[in-house]
Image (cartoon, rainbow, N blue to C red; front, side):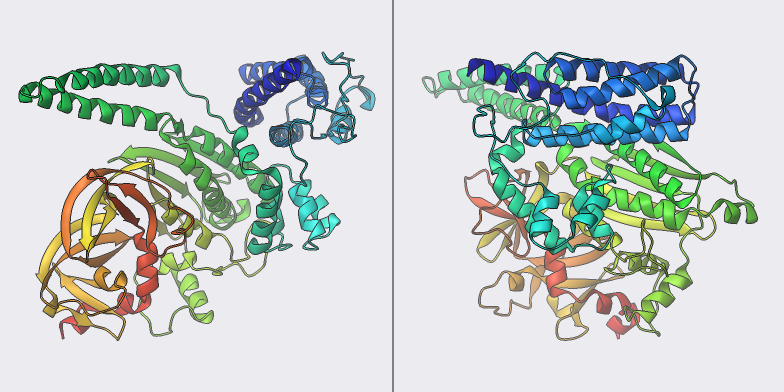
Length: 625
């Protein structure tokens, strides 16, 4: 059993290292495509594949190693000048990279899963000597193991995980899709199969969620997190240990004070130092989850490359500020919405080469993805030099779909924001890339979930820019503690624009549900949080009151509270099952006095009580009159 444990551990280590290698390799492949004569990129790719081959054989994962060995033969010919690294070769390299990722993902879930790369090995051989290449035989360390993945017989004792079905098998068993649809989806290796099936219209989001829930149940919760790792710089670990060491010293000093309570000055000094080192320790611990956004930007470079080739467009991708760091949880959640936005830029934004030439533009379009750190937030921009948004076309489409009225007057910003409505699309025909009306609404909701915002600016004929603002981390933030009736709640400081006090007699009603107030010349929708959280829904006093002016989805709202208690660094805690799904609440925290306070999620509160359309069209003159 010790030998088995050793085998399992070194295979896990191999898979962790391979994930990092594969994340680096994709960028190198794209770099080689831009400049086939880039010898440094070619040498880096060759070393990467060579290491993958050697390490794979050494730990007994021969199916993966054989594919790497065949790919190494191909790269050798390119190094010797016998083949050119053209787009067709790069397509093959990227396909192999996708397959490696799929192999690693499968093995990370189950070390005994069967993987088969014969199709790609055959495909590679067509690019080498007379469509025939001999794979050098390699002897695995453990001869008694079935290298072809046949691990399902009862005599095999090496199986260290529960058996479960892959997602495609589950969907077929549930009669949601046909085997042919799954096979077609599986051929697109650079995407997850569930995402592909949704884009093809084969399944719905509910079908995917049910299948994923079933798969998660089969795998078990501990197995799903077992292989999730991060590579952390040693400097961050050193900083964490230094902070911890100082905290231990201060803790000892604090302990000694209990024998000399008269030395209040010394005690206060220790408490001040302990507070500082605790803050530093907290910040250092949070930094362990921070990773460069380059990981995400590299994925987007691949999306631009593949989508533009599918559409027959030539587009250059430029990234800036990709060394900025952000919480890994945010990167994981941001990947899908950012991918939608980049695809839309390629499909909707950039014109065809003929159209660009006809309007005096360069044939090659440009998409710029940039990141910058401003005021404790990460700002991401997706810019293109395409045709820009057509306001008249967007408004006409919204009217035809019944989303707005014919006589309704909207600002430029409000017209642009219409593209975030579920089901809205100006595309007349559905394509493999876009046009189903699914995507931008998902983008908006995902960004809101991350406590961020998105703004659109566009000039027709010049291009479009999507600006996303995100917090650097969701784990700890500065929050305002407010009292609403007899309970205390947390409002993130990042949501608050200002705090005002005024007489509620000046409130004006648009209808039975909608009320607004004039604050410094701005007509702002008013929401009484006392009513929202009141069990008996009794009417609050109509006297003076405190109002938080908050910005949600780039709109201002006035929220009535009873009292502002203080500000505090808030440590976000997930809610238990009994409170999960509670409207208007995203989590909880423990206050300095030991009591619990709920963290408010303002978007869901506003959506549940506010009719935004009425607030948008209400004019200042109507309110004042």
